[in-house]
Figure 1: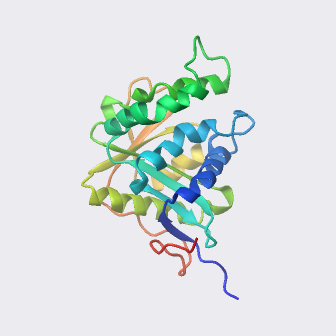
Figure 2: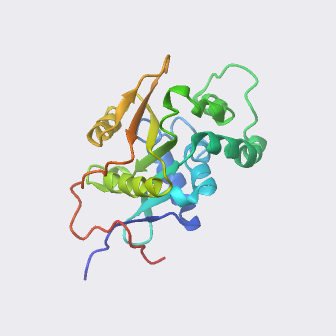
Length: 226
C-alpha cells in the first residue's frame, strides 16, 4: 500500500476550516496562539481568510495527500488594491462581530481588533517597489522539510504570470526561525522607519527559489482528489 503523496495545489473553498486552524496554530511567532486569542475566528479573519476569499487565484495549500490542507501560502499582487477590497468587501461584515476599539488596547485580542480595523497599515511607502505581499504558514510537523519553499515557488510563478516584479512580507522580528527561512530564500530587509516589533523583507520574483529537501515523489502542481 503506497503512502499518500503531499502536493501543493490551489486553494479550494472546502479548505477554509483547515486554513483557519493552521493560522491559529501558527499565529504566535510560529506557534499556537489559542492561549492569547480565545476566539478561534479572530486571527484567521485578519491574516488568512481575506486573502483566500478576495484573491483565491493567489492562494495555495500543501495537501497532505488525503485532501487535507496542512500549510498555505496566501498573497496579493497589489497591496493597495487588496487594502481597498478588504475595507469595502471584507471589513463591513467583520465589524458587526468585532466593533472598532473605543480606547487604547489592553488585551492581545483588542490589539488584533485594532489591526483588523486599520488595513491601511499595510500600505508602507518604503515597500512600494514590492507591490505584492504574502503570508505563509505550515503546521509544525510539516516544517523544515522543503514544503514551505515549494509553496513559495508556486506563489512566485503565479506572481510572475501576473507581471509582478517583487514581493514583500511583514513578520514579527522575534520569530527567528521564520527569519532564517526567509534569509535562506533570498529575502532582504527593507529599511522602514519605526517599524515597532515587526520587520519588512522583500525579494524579486524574477529568481526561482532553489529546490528544498523534499522527496522525489512530492508534487508541486497536481491536485489531489477531494
